[in-house]
Length: 361
Ligand code: KG4
Ligand code: ZN
Image 1 (cartoon, helix red, strand yellow):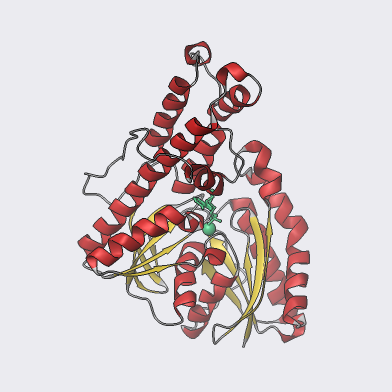
Image 2 (image 1 turned 180 degrees about the horizontal axis):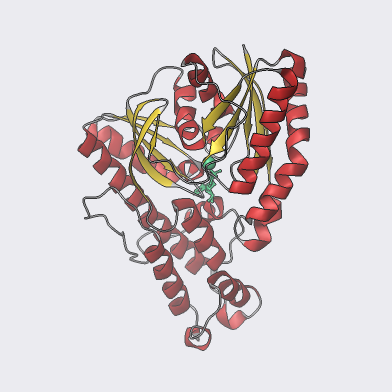
């Protein structure tokens, strides 16, 4: 059985062809990073318009790479939750049109479940039950994953997502978008102990994250690190505008490369501490001994290293999505195979659900 999977939840337009034996025949990802770079983050309206332009060429390219025609596809699966409403609509509309034209089944994909399923694909064997940590530009969520389709929210961010914090701090430091890889590169040459940033909620028994205080602490540290910081700080406008303006043109306000590296390393260490601390608290609370980690921030090598160290120490089986499957892609949409096996086919009234679902079954 051949399944075409579509992914348009945020700012990647992606398609893949997978089989019911979880083989990947082709995968195409059209990134929109170039379109959003000058804004320092994803602009929803630009994202949905770009999806509209790209979805059909991406599907064509995927079929071409798989050496298949549309007539050979047996089902279409599409991520319909969570994500940006306009972006989700583009993928869902395309999927519905293909299903109507070909009279084939439509399958719904929960994007967060798909991020965890990337670990199942890479492992080549069952990884459930497990605690699932999804860390991306839009989400920082911990789930009790009783099975691939049976997720219960244990905790999540109460403000910024982890990736969002990386992106915003990178903008403040004048580093290019997307911020996660830029921070990681800058941090490689820095001292993670140079600045002591807050680790929010770590002593709180709830399994929630908070990154906005950390982001604000970095902003104040940047201001203090710059000579004459008091000149621009009062009444400042948007954080990114102020930081980029002062960073780029006026030498009086510019941070040295060493300061940028130390700030990036110290921020990264604090963010990783929060993610690792809460994740292992979740494993302890649930009594589970397998951990799966997915989403764009899971590409961060310091996070991967710290998770592995902690997992080894506590004898937890750790599965982190391989780098190519961390950021958004349609290969992880192979979770559609599980839905099809469970007889979960959708009607044409399937809608988009932008928000996070607490209990997905
Ligand atoms: O999963 P993803 O592609 O999209 C969403 O569903 O949001 O994740 C994108 C996020 C961005 O915020 C990006 O900065 C972050 O993942 N990211 C990283 C790294 N690579 C991507 N964050 C930290 N370190 C990285 N190496
Ligand atoms: Zn994602």
